[in-house]
Image (cartoon, rainbow, N blue to C red; front, side, top):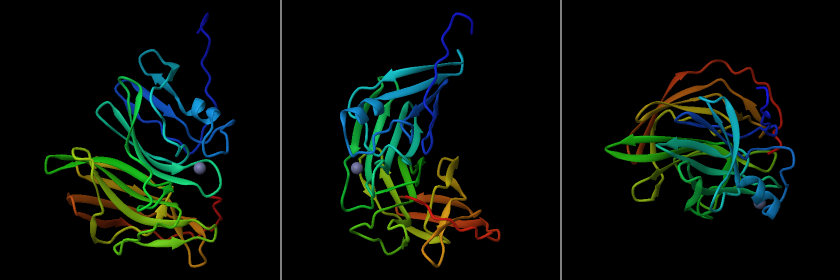
Length: 259
Ligand SMILES: [Zn+2]
């Protein structure tokens, strides 16, 4: 590295860093200097930057994006499809302010487009998960779980646990059709996961995914980590079927989450 300055990025947590092609893309997340406000020029300046790591050159670089980045900057859900990175929902960085807008970053043009604005009719949340899936020849985004604020509309097939922290934890699931831009609320069959947040979710194949761990709700309204594993299969755009692959005994270590 002689003669080259080593790029340093700020410490980061509650972020995602997806890989597309030969690069890793790092956007937002909780970090030193993140203004604890809804919106400000400083926050926009910070969130208008995407840092990339090139595997071929082993170098970090910083890119200014065009368009308007979303405000759900912490604990957002993130997935990739072709050259796009999709960002859904997230915590705003202050108080009980959560978002549920859907945004896409085109990594070829490094520009943001909002696909769906914040929507009061759906739950606003962070710490959920999202995958891109394909079935019946159509591409979808699949969103699951998270915690946030009580929604105006609660769907009967899902649960919404009231937490002592004032937040609500859910197992709510959504499908977003990438062709027509419509959200649908799927029905579930089999054994659905309980309300869960801060888990991992990964794709197994085109229409199958796996959820691991996360925070679930105890009887007192606190969250504790679980080692549940759920495999789910999206068979058509109104059915998400789950089966439990393993449920181990929970150690029951309770702790209070701040958000
Ligand atoms: Zn806010």
